[in-house]
Amino acid sequence: MKPFTFSVPQNIIAGKGSLKQLPDIGKKLGTHAFIISGPHLNQMGVVKGCTDKLEAAGIQVDAFTQTEGNPSVETVDKAAAAFLASGADFIVALGGGSPMDVAKAVGVVAKYGGSITEYEGGGKVPGDIIPIIAIPTTAGTGSEVTAFSVITDHSRNYKLTVFSYKLIPAYAILDAELLTTAPASVAAACGIDALVHALEAYISTDASPFSDAMAEKALELIGGNIRKYVANRANTEAAEAMLIGSLFAGIAFSWARLGNVHAMSHPVSAYFNVPHGVANAILLPTIVEYNALADDGKYRKIYNYVSEIPAAEETFVPSMLTEKLKELNAMLGIPASLREAGVTEETFDAMAEDAMKSGNILVNPRASKKQDILNLYHKAF
Ligand SMILES: [Zn+2]
Image 1 (spheres, protein in one colour):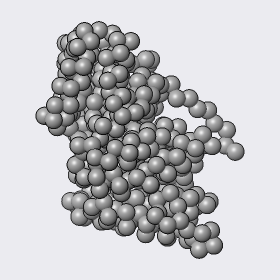
Image 2 (cartoon, protein in one colour):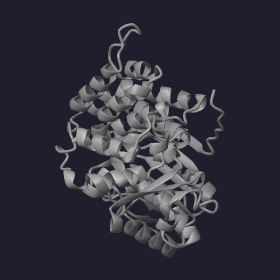
Image 3 (cartoon, protein in one colour):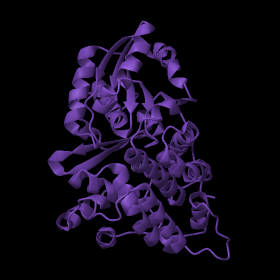
């Protein structure tokens, strides 16, 4: 067994209707909240719903609701300036991965100053950040429990990653009732992203028995519910299973890291603004096929979590998993290739260069050189 350490330094509150606990949790952190969210949730009245709950409990509220998909350094700067001007005590991150990534970055720069680009990489965050209550409205990035913030630096077409266990939000509230209004395309892309988190953490060379336990439960919950949830987001049982599955996947990959899918998807999003989940979903079958050479028996387990009908040991071959994932993508309406998603080939060399900078390459089960990454981009194209 590989030696491992593990801790989940966080309070997790889960259950339908658990959002009503927000004011009591807020009171533990201060008297002035700053909500970070996106324009869509603002228009839908979800931001107002949270504001009303907090204000009714005597907590002052300010908000920044301009986070975009693949959020930028500029957005972090604007949100941090607004946070500091408000004088708030804590942050409520409400939404999918983007508001949470921004909230974590604001939590760092509002406390320690400078630009988020100065904290790129691992271990650069000096200490505790502004406390965050994370409330996911998608299932999901798992960002409510992860130690990462991913921010796009447009000046160099690059998605930078800040990695520190200090980034983990103090509280996560998982209320499946917030997931029922997601469009099917968002539910599909976020659901596959969560599946990729679990899968990459599970086969990572940094996987431990603890992260495996988290990843296997995540695969079971996501594999068994993603079709039902995308088919009908109002199915709160399926939504809740997806939400808890993406939480477990987030914990798994905070410790086991990810792999080539995420290393390669970040440049796809940075250059072509393809949503994170869509970029991952398209790359997944190609990289699962590439990694088959390193399979030590986990592929059949993954297949059995994802497939409606399990495969017996004697009949299973790794290509069955690749085909199953292609079929799942097609069922959920994911584009079949990078070309279909609007990507063009002329930047592949620079993208492969950027992908090689990711720490995730180092923990991918099959070792990769830049030429391998380039070949994989062409294959997925
Ligand atoms: Zn992801």
